[in-house]
Image (cartoon, rainbow, N blue to C red; front, side, top):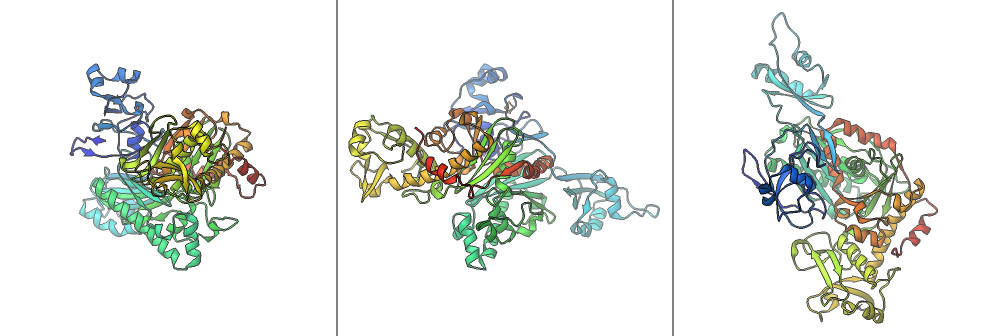
Length: 612
Ligand code: FES
């Protein structure tokens, strides 16, 4: 993206999104504001961008642009799908939005909890001896806030130095500050997605509802283990670990805060609120709450609705009165990140039958038939993050993320590699693709076993020499330097890797199968599957269907939803109504515990095989 600004030089940003996501959503998810009043629904005709290479012209484009503009690549961003690398020019914003677009096509009317009022007060006299506070509160009597001590300490001096022309800053119901002069245009907040692996921060301008800067980094708790269970175990083994994990979370959020404020050119003192979506363990560790009950049966949280805390209590150097809003959790394994995801995808409002799957080590599943909403969690294990896989790796440069097999072609394997470098391993989406393709060409049978050499030569002559052994183990070579390279030094998919993937996908499909049975639904009844999270969003829909990770449906019904936890956190900052909606979800969603179901094991075993 090349983002133009009327008052500043253009900024260039390279972003990576799942194929098929609109340019409008790609920008919005990455903190780039594109003009819009319809929220990406193709009706306002404001989301003008110039795209190269040029994309097909839609009838809305034809109505919006001249022939010369169309030829130059001008298109409506919400109607262009990113199916390859594009250069996108974003002109400066023209309209001042009253609503913002977030999540999956959700439009939010701007009603942030952070409000500012500029007032010019009459000075006290012997006839008017109202206190400073009453004088100020009388001028903003529609808000009825309760003053913070920090504000009271500043009030007399600021009022007099600013000739009683001041801006009152209210967060929720608290009067957190009084600032000299008119600062109403400086109103910011930060949305955090506190993931077990990756943490993302988005700095939001609450006046316009647009993102100003986005930054992400690995969670600094990584040395304590890659998943929530290992971090909970760390606190059980070593009494000092809880404090250190808490500090690591604070450091992560602080580093990101500094980064987004620096990049956005925003004074941290003008950030008055943060919202945070994290799973139950991440939230507990951030607050210094013992997570042990989350890790052992019967898996209980200390609280589903953590009280708001001051941002300074989690180590953030923002405005001293800045609040932190935390998302409520549905259960020990369906946390605030999923509630935020439900908000961002409108699971509670859409009347369609929809299935939401956040694929990860712990996989959260939500199913709605338009009336009832059920949720559950399935322990998928580390396969999708590259763990327990012989050549597994995270989705970083060198990871194979796309695999296509052509059994008859001379070069029978086509790979998509992150960063376009030499393949070093395979990430979760590459793993799903590879297995799906091997099933498709018949080198893996429905039970997940590699076929014999004889069968391989017959059905896939161009690939048969890649099906070989490392020691006793059967492997398929995805990438090798030369045809005679040692398989042990190549990127391979072993029989054990296939089994790991089968266990992971069977755990997930057992989850949604049981939820579907509960609501009396068949595969064909599902109108939309939302694949969420940093891994789920990059999955190939066709491959996910082929291995049975999602119900058997036309691929157009399966959509990448992106980082919905972060989007939900943005929504909570932009609208107090949406924030209340997140709380209401606790009442509306029924949590289904799978671990005590007598039918879980039977279903799991049935679902290990690939659909035929
Ligand atoms: Fe309104 Fe694209 S966002 S037409």
